[in-house]
Length: 535
Length: 39
Image 1 (cartoon, helix red, strand yellow):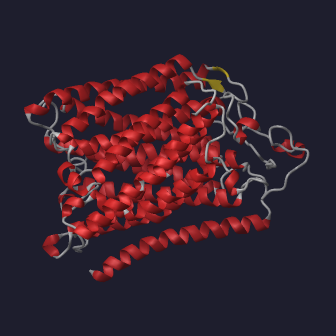
Image 2: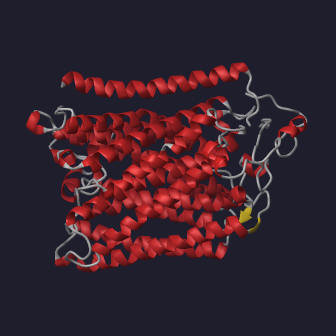
Image 3: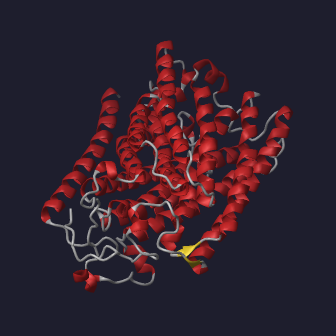
């Protein structure tokens, strides 16, 4: 740990280091060669934003096709490619990189470090994303079209498709390598570069959630890499891991994939919990209720995530004892998740609350993520799941978790920290308009999908029976409202960066992490060159 | 430019980073070896 300079000023700079103050280089080389955690965080966030709009356009294609029964725009193969690449782009291209962007910006600031532990590795982690994204999205333009097996890449279908699958497999490998390198960087930074006095149990909860998430990533991304490597050898090198014709077992892929896939769900939601845990205390003007229990609940969720993968495959014919084990283990996760929900509510209880845009997204998160959690509990019940498996009920469930969960937290987090990051305050009116249109559009899009699923409508099908027509129409209308309202967000962010009014050092009364209390707005290019002392 | 780290901190950082990298590679190797041996 760097030693404290008693002459450090309010910006965390030692006067003896004044000669080292300089801004970023200019032009494209700033971004190509940067090792600055703020620059890399910014690039991650813009990359995620771009992929979010690409994946969102695919989603609107899906909803346009499903607006009414019959085939309107796409043939079934292309429709399936849309659902597949939409899923992969949103999971690996939008949600995960967005959270890594937040981690890059905030972890060093929250712990009082000058930068990440491995700045060059950090640069590499980001730039690996670009070829991966080109492979993933570019797979639409090769003969046979993009992978159409669903984002889970299940064999035997995935083994039979064209070269786009190889591009997808390569993209997943690269994205996995990037995630692992990012995680190594985050863990190493948190464990070794905290400012004097910043003990583990004093760290902001966002840092804790990312520390745990990074361990999850290191544990499961290599498992996904192993699974897709075996897919590749099955396709091209004569093995039969998953090919029944050669004595292989397609079900084995499901086990390996979901051993990765369920922790992956928590990889996408734990950092969201961290962001919400920063926003709610700031707007309730109270410290987070039950800090220690939040840390233990996060760790419990992470540990439990390794023993619940079977709930994704209740219909493949596991033994009853296996089904029961996975059912009860899944239900157990509701306990630490409930601890977190009640702690957030208790934080708000008798707080001096105001409802600026970040808080609106946080409260929206709380209400809607809880709905997603409850529908998850419904799906954890084996006989219910056997009925609802592969229906729109599942689609509704995971969109409540990942859109109104992860994405709402990202939106709230961007509004919360944008004044600090950019030095400018966003337009609150536009922010609130964005929130309410998102809230209404999202619920109109996804709540009816519960009804469709309960009525038996299967997912990943471009056509459907007439009885499903009305709710599908509503769902598509909601999706378009939600989708186009994101343009307000984009406009608000860009206009804030370019011409928003100057923001004060501490935009939010109740915000108490180091970036608000120790650093000016706008932030210098280099911060905490001399570590602050935490009391 | 990051402030210069003392050598003890630099050693801790590299030890942590390399251990984690080894863990990731080990998980990948174990998954592949288990199934390739079975194959």
